[in-house]
Length: 171
Image 1 (cartoon, rainbow, N blue to C red):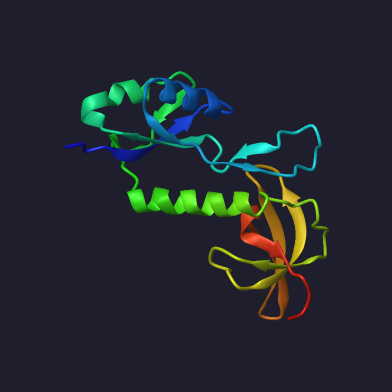
Image 2: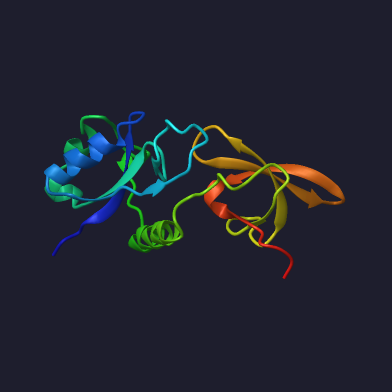
């Protein structure tokens, strides 16, 4: 009986593809979520990791050996707490796969159509359902800044770019 679980591997900067290829060559199942994006710089990569520097591997640590996964070329090692690799619940990985497929089906993370001042709706996270004003793209892992009205004041809030959608008009 297999006791394989999902684990997270932390990679060195921009080495996710290398780590993913190595693990697959070793016969391990991986989940390396990437998304098509519309970058501000047209020469920038159009395929970006959903979780920069992290990917998932499905393995039986007793059979494979922890050290094999801790020393993958291009990786820093398994995400661990108290020195012990921590499994990720299978349902969480399944939900991530579903969400990534949903974003891909929608054409990826498209931010080119957004200009400062555009009305947006936040679709995920603690502010899901709120309407806001798009303010700016932020450097880093596809984050944006929006303006929310809270207690009568405009407040700057940073959210994942995939958690907003442009409002299509009043409905």
